[in-house]
Image (cartoon, rainbow, N blue to C red; front, side, top):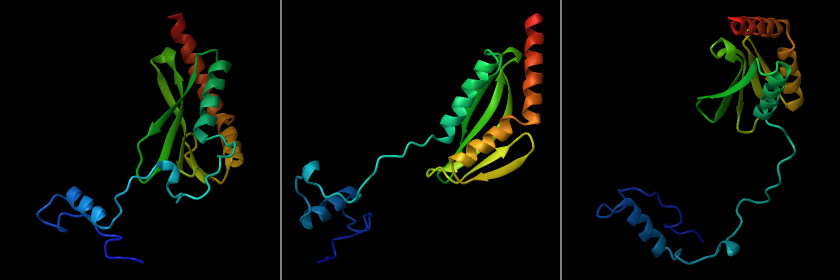
Length: 170
């Protein structure tokens, strides 16, 4: 049976002579809802929550590749991942190559944007100014591999390595 007190808006206009928090307490107390209840006896309104599947996040994949780049270049170049500020529950990360020897110069390779549910996600390839949509992890890793092995990225890596070595000799 539903009563008028089941779902009341909490606002200062409910009872003008009291604060909103006091109004809420009064409504709850009058509705007979005030009772001590342990967490064990609380009703589960969430349903079944399953364990997450063994899925890597885009950021963990990018961190792995940043580490691989550092190993391949013996630390001369470092992959960097920076979160960018976004609105409306979207996560955005910029992946760049950093050259510590040339004043920490960064070259942005790509940006990944996704919602809290991860897929689909979008990858913006900054080397050719193309945005791609990836529906799952397999599509993302394939797209990422295509970008990282591209001629444009290889040229950038080569140029950064040459310039990094040049500054060491000075």
